[in-house]
View (cartoon, rainbow, N blue to C red):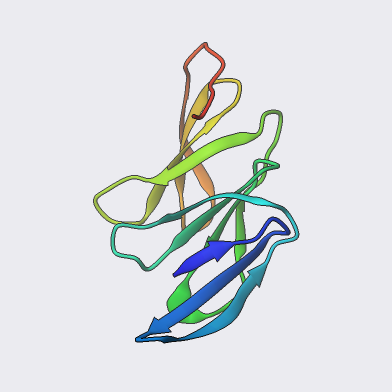
Length: 120
């Protein structure tokens, strides 16, 4: 079980029967608004309240890597494009949808929706 605390810490709870072990996986120093696993569960996207997107690879137990940083408009949400886990799509508050290459954070495509976006 992965979850985040208000302080921007990503936790992992290993639960087996009635016992559990807690581990701190990453501390990104920004409140995390959402966690999204890739379809094959090898990559975890972390989206912060400030609009920054990080990737975390549970099998490598490393640090979270900043993939996308909020520029003129905060990223409101992000998710993987399937099949696979090479690309993700994000949307900003101002209504710009973008496709990203996860390997290096290259923006591959943009589409302006011409409307303000809200998440419920």
